Each structure stands twice: as C-alpha cells, then as structure tokens.
Image (cartoon, rainbow, N blue to C red):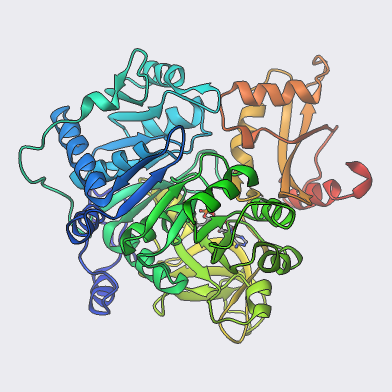
Length: 546
Ligand code: OOB
C-alpha cells in the first residue's frame, strides 16, 4: 500500500521503502536549491549557463545562485512562500533557471507548463493547483503571452500575480521583483515536494506529478553516472527545458549537479543547433526521434564543426532501429537511447553496451532498486522474454498523482506499482524493448496527446454528434493524430479545416490539433458497445486512405 497522510496532496512512499532508499544512499537529504548553493561555493566562477540569443548572456555559478536568492527574496516579499504553486511557462531562456531555482529555494512549487500551452491548459493548471502566480515570457514564437496571462487571470480569481520575463505590458516585470535577501530562507526539506511535472496523460485533463527533492536528485545523480556527465560536460538544451527529459535525463539539472555548463538552444533546427555546437563546443544533448532524424540527415552535408559532440541521447518516443543505426556515423558521436517517464522510471542504454544493444533496445533502469514487472491483462507475470504491460516501483517513481485519488486507483496497483501503459519485452541482459502501448494516448514525436481531451473539445462543437481521436503511423513523427467525426443529423456540413480551427481556437497547444479529420456515419463498437479504437486505428492504417 502507498502511504497517504490525511490532508496530504498525494500519496508517498511507505516508511519501510523510504527507510530502505535512505539506507541504500539513494536519498541523500539534499535539496535542489542547496545543490546550487554548494556548487556556487565550490566553484563560483565556472560558467553554469549560456543563453545565446539575442546577444550572448552567461551566468557563473555564483551569479545564478545570487540571482536565485534575490528573486526568492522578491517572491517572499510578495507573499509567495513554502508550498505555494507557481505556474512557470518560459521557453529556453536564462530567466527559466533564475525563476525555477528561486522558487525551489523557498519551497514554492513550480508547475512546469510548456511554451506551447494555451488558455485551456494554463487555466486548468492555475485553477486546479490554486496557483498564486504565473510566469511568462513577453512574446515567444510570435505569440504574446501577456495577452494569454490577462485572459487566464480573468478566469482564475485566485491567481494573484503575473510575472513577465521582458516587457511586462500591464503585468509585473520579473526584473522588478528581485530584492536583497534579509537572511537565510526557511527552505524545503529533502523529502518534501520540489515541483509538479505534467503527465503525458490519457484522460480529459493532464495529471500533475509530484516529485520530491530526494527522489529527483537520485535520478539525476544516477543519470550523470550512466551518461558520464562531469564538470567538462557542455550540454545543449534543445527540447523545452521544463520537460522531464531535458531537465533530468541527465539534462540541465544533471549538468549543474556535476558542475558543467548548460547551453540553451532557442530553436531545434540543425542550422541553429549546429551553429551553437560549433561555437560553444557542446559535448552532449538530448533529442526526440524526429529531431534526431533531421539532424542525422543534415549533418553529413553541413559545414559546421560538430567534433566536440560526444553523446546524443534519444528518447520520448520509439526510435526505429534503422534511424538509430544511422546516428553515430552521421554525427560522429555515441548514441544513448532513453525510455523514461515524468512519473519516474528512466531506462538508458549504457556507454559500454555493444552497438546492437544500443540500436535495438530502449535501455535498462537507472537503479538496482527499480522494480520491473512485465504482466498480462490479469496482472500475472508473463514468461521471461515475452511482451506484456510494464509495471514499475522504485526510489524515484511516484506512488500517486497530485490530488487525483480516483485516477490513482487505476494508475497504480494495490502494492504501489505504477502502470506505465507501455508494452515491453525484457532481454536476458535486463534491457527493455518498447513494443507498443496499451494506454489511450498518441505519441506525436515525443509530444503526448490524450485523445479524450481532444474528443471533449470536438463534442462541444454544435455540429458534432460524436468524435474519436486515434493515431496514424507517420514516417517522420512516428504517429500523427486523426479525428473521426460523426456530424449531427441535419447539421451544416463541415470542412476538416474548420474542425481543426475549432480545436485551435479552443485554446490548446498546437500539437494537439488533429493532423487529419475524417467524417464517418458510425463508429465500430466493441462487444460491450464502447467505441473500438482498435478498429478505428486499423481502418486508419489502410494505406489507400491517406
Ligand atoms: C518522457 O516522459 P513523458 O512523461 O513525456 O512520457 C512517457 C512515455 C512513456 O510511458 C512511453 O510511452 C513514452 O513516453 N516513451 C517512449 C520512450 N521514451 C518515452 N516510448 C518508446 N521509446 C522511448 N525511448 O517521454 C521521458 C522522460 C524522461 C526521459 C525520457 C523521456
């Protein structure tokens, strides 16, 4: 059973497990804010962070630490404190790190939104977490986040502050917030929550993932060891910094933990990224499979010097063996496959694995205490080597979502294993091969879409009688989304473009807008009368259809 203290926001590890993880040295009693302080004391003048655009800005460890302190003091002065939730929606810019470390230092919980999120998602995060503040850039990718913030604020009376990195418009500039700290902060304890991550999700609204300082830092330390991250590592953050993969696998936190340098990449295209690799002598980065493909295609003909690159991690979605084989020769560096989840468990191929293992498996768990079960539909273990549902439990895998007890009953077993929804097979060396997915989710090149969320939006259209969203195979993204729509009798005919526009105007991240829309008269049903997504998916896979 999981431990749920009355009044707590989420279940945690039972005392017996927590004791074991501490005794094993996994949980060391460090906090994320404390780690930055220690590194700033040990090597104040090393460069922690490089933000190349526009006009190269750098932060030494001491500067990042001081900025975090000053912002933390400013947040406290505005009444933001321990346990308060703050929705952070910042792109890959230096302010992301200043804000996150400031919040972590005073024990306020960053809620990690992605830059692509829009009004529907942000309003949900703000109201569900009862956030007191929301942090945005001014304009990013041509989109004015200050306007979004004004709308969210109207809908969410509890939201007291909007802080803007850059020109604040009618809100408060981040630069105005900071002030001189008056003394040491009453920071969080290592076993307490550090932040809330977003789940990929299978339901109408994304669930929030509560991670503690102890558990997260263990996964980061383990990732550093596996990937060989040290003070000489120069890591390029290409994916959105708020996502768990670029944050901790080993990501920017792994690099700061080891005293290395984090280089921010404003755009993931090869011209931008390759230019930065050359200029900043980048040694390591993490990519989703579609980006890895684009880089692999672009590198051989490029004139950029990529010789500093030692390791590229690829994960977030299935990386085909064919594509994986091409990466090392094209980029002239090592490949590590990562199969992880924001809920916890992360698997890596190892630097000393042979090429066959690296290109044909998705790695093995970080920790000897990651418990892995591969089971059938009745939760019985399948014979070794056969495929089944992956269940996991361990020192950095959550025991429940934040304020979602109903959902927890389905997402976790009685004895605390997380049901990942992934179908895997285990090789004799303990490496996992991802063979498919049992959860109702679309993985669009690493970006996760919960069909139910989009179906609910479609059902709000006056002409739509019913909707079902499924994945279609795609050579580049792995999967794309297809919305099957049944129109109401007598309703005005709709064009696919109008359906897409309706979803977009509802205010959701662009990647959730269906790639394809098809009108049908009825849905195939299962024996018990539910819509059969399996049949819809196989209908969608008929090559003549698209
Ligand atoms: C990462 O985290 P999330 O939370 O966005 O998504 C987790 C899900 C997994 O359950 C699995 O369905 C899929 O994404 N996934 C993969 C994969 N890596 C993730 N499926 C196949 N092959 C892979 N290599 O995506 C994430 C978190 C930390 C590190 C890396 C990825």
